Image (tube, rainbow, N blue to C red):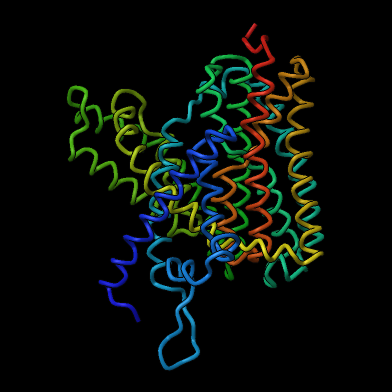
Amino acid sequence: MPTNFDLVTHLFIQLAVILAVCRIAGFLFGRYFGQTQVVSEMIAGVLLGPSFFGLIAPNLQHFLFPLKLTISGTTTTIVHPSMTILYALSQIGLVLYMFLIGLQFNTKHISEHFKYAGTISLSGVIPPMLIGGFVGVTLATNNDLFLNHIAPWQAALFLGSAMSITAFPMLARIIYENGIANTKIGTLAIGAAAFDDAAAWSLLAIVLATTKNSPMIALLAIGGGIAYALAMVVFGRRLFRRFFHVNRQDNSVPVETLSMLLLVLMLCAWFTDLVGIYSIFGSFIAGTVMPRGQFADKSRDLLERLTVSFLLPIFFVYSGLNTQIKLLLNPSVFGIAVLIVAIAFISKGGGCLLATRLGGANWREAAIVGVLMNARGLMELILINIGLDKGLISPALFTILVLMAILTTVAASPLFNLLYLRTSTVNVP
């Protein structure tokens, strides 16, 4: 067994490699392929895994990122402690990042153009949910994709959720960077994406709750999650507003106040993990109820840089280490992968495109919304990592869904730029 000193020393070289590769990928894919840093890091995570790095330098890849450890004197293997450390760091990064997403969640985008946003949202949820659900039911007994204990309806809900989710952070970034946040198209896309992700995460929560062996455990998860959300909306918002109003000093965030904020955030993540949902639900809801204003802006500035530049790349690489492209060499699995990717593009992107067109937009505006809504990105990776960690899906299906997330996300930026540059009618009438 490696000593604590060995693990810490190994962690430093792992982090150095992760950060270096992610920054290089960001430069190359950003400059030559027009991709954002987040998308580049998704690709970098796969490149550092067994699918690329493990093929060209298997010994070095295994040395840097050993997945398993054989206990001395036995044939028993366990998860390598260094991977456990990376996993823990990646979860901290996710908790902080989902808090930041919640902190930037703007309910005004939902209230404005509510009818159209709701229609687009339903078009982005119902078709992929129905088609993905049908595929899930059909494939539920396939042991190459789903594990034996999962029921067909659970497989349907999980795959439907994976098809329905939208890369909300990436979508928002593209919209804000291009200055169309206050336009009709920008408002519709952000509002619809918020609805879509809420629906997808709710379905995932149900699946996670119902995979427990005891009905009481499932009831605790669902009831505890609802109680937590209500308590945060009714009481948490008021307490946060009072506390952060009292502790606000000039334009800075005192260390004590930031520490208290992190303490509350960790407790929220712990509670939602405890009741059986997932830590990111707790952190996201905490972010949504946090009072907006100067304190929220300053806190976001302080947390965002460390989270996005240091902790989040660890999650992408950890996901890449579980992605095994060689599993797709099985002809039947490859055929399923092509089918799922095709369904992902057609059902969600096509559904949102048609709904936007019926809402009065021209075809190019409708295509912009369809392209943006079709990207899965980080949110998809979070969802399928939960599925893999909880034993719902196999490494093969995980790999298929990672491929689907990357392809739909990689296509978003260049297609958006192509359509947007040719459009001169995106402003709200």
